[in-house]
Amino acid sequence: MHRRAVLIGGVSVGAGAFAGCSSLFGESQPADSKPQLEVFVANALEADIEVTISALRGSTEFFSHTYSLEPGTGDESQSFVGTPTEVTVDIKNGRSVTRDYSVPASCDSPELNVTIEPDEILVTNGCVPS
Image (cartoon, rainbow, N blue to C red; front, side):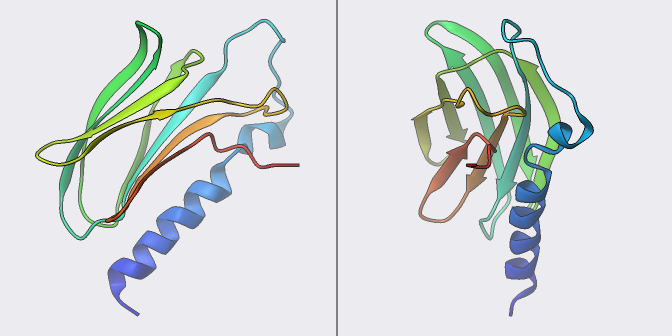
């Protein structure tokens, strides 16, 4: 097994392990508050990338940040408050996609998880189905 495959596997498992972990500590939000979304971006490519992640609802931008990631690494240093309906992933000198984003009402600790793979860009909410 290649070192990068192991590292990417660790990044993916780590993202899944942290999904919803604040709910383990009994934190909950009032129904009328906006969630704080932790942002996790993972580079599953075999090359360095510079990628900008933007989260929007209509013309309102809740979040935009540019990450520089080495192969097989991730970054979870950012968060934002809001409820976006779409996420744009723009890789410098590469692909750009916009994905719909939603969080089920039953999700106590939503996240914005982006994984950049060779053939696909995944955007998920980090909620574990019950």
